[in-house]
Length: 269
Length: 226
View 1 (spheres, rainbow over the protein chains, first blue to last red):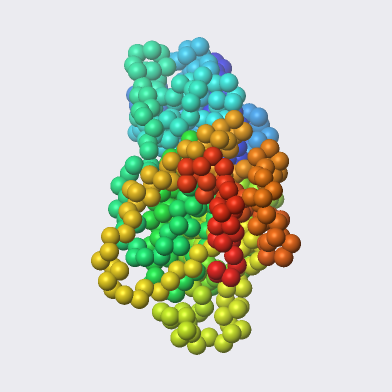
View 2: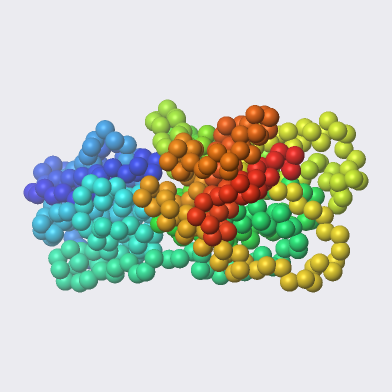
């Protein structure tokens, strides 16, 4: 019999809400009950979490387990709660002390063998955790680059459930974010020198890049409209501003202000 | 619509305008896009956010992107405009798909000229590194000026601020006044031309625009250019 709490973040668009996960272990027939408006992916967390805990070498409590996500009225979606759910169960079962979990937000999807998989929307989750006053956040190691964009939080990257558990009890250290990625300094293969002539259009693009203005290029085909636009957007428009962070709710780190793939093809009505 | 603005069932997902936040949204062959899609860009262009309502709730995504449009002058688009075989109505309708309210939000218009000699291909043209140096310098100047106000680029500065606290002398903005009086630009257009003028000043290394820069900004706004 035991009760434990962990914390994670639910996303509603790009607005994050801190979610408290309570785990009650004991009494009744063995089984897992997940309450608090979970979606299909979150429902399946029951099976993932159990397999991940067992395959990481811990005993799964053979009792009735109630996992409650609150605020209960808020819809919760996705697989990012797996890590917090697993730690809640282990803490309620007495394997982890509750004190180790206080003030920490745990994010990540668990593979059946206990590896921590990256999730979508780490950035807004971290911003929500920070504004909720959280001090420590664990994210999947693959999301550390994205997580490095947020200041004012101790962010840790973990590769597996075992890593997180050992860190929680103070037996091991977790990876910390490295220097921020700078997308502008990435290889810029296409050079403006490839565009022939077009003094006015070059000047217009330069002004646009310098001031963040919108620009329209009109001209016959084959004069370099697309070339010019692509070279300016990838080479001259700084996509590495601190505000560039928001681009990532779905797409990962900002692509240096590149044209958006999938939307470059016109659609005829 | 879902791909560009955002959407989908349940809770709306972000579209290209949000993925391009703080970056560039490049719409190639802009008149080939359905007009209702292009016009859906109008609100995000002004607000910098996009609000999508569905049965499960309303979500707001950031969408402060820089719009780059490219267009042919007409459907047949020969190398030289004089060889165009499109009826005048088709020509007008083609670029007319970029609606007036959308174009009013586009600060700069430039016409690309046909290339007339292959010798130009061999000439050394300015490279990305050279232009990027100037752009970064101008961005730094703008960022330093607006640092205390919470804006990073000239494009973000609200019009009223440029007309009051950072107002330019009457002589400098006279070209804008006469263009307004003649109906060549809208009030929003005048604000946008002012912002471009500030960028021109940043690029030229001056602390504020003069009349010549305001005129240059108006030149790039001229609808006849596109």
